[in-house]
Image (tube, rainbow, N blue to C red):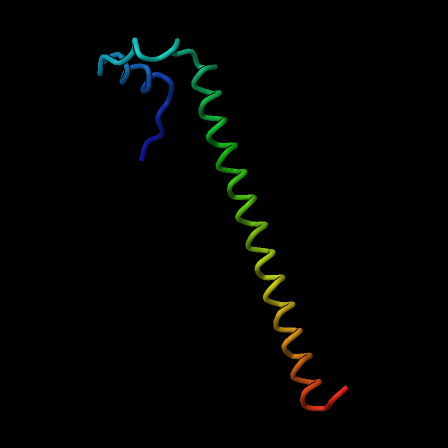
Length: 77
C-alpha cells in the first residue's frame, strides 16, 4: 500500500469539496496532528508493555508462593 503524502491529502480535500471545513492545510498543521496520533499510539504501546510485564511478574510470584505453600504442607515448617 502506498503512503499518503501532503499533496495527496490536499488534493483529496479539494476534489471532495471539504477543503473549507479544515484549517489551513499547512504541512505543520498536518504534521502536528499526525505526530499527536503517533505519540498517543507509542504511549499506549508503552502502557500495554508495562501491564504485560507486571502480569508476568505477578504470575511468577504467584507460582513461587504456591510452590512454597506446597513445600510447607508437605514437609512442614
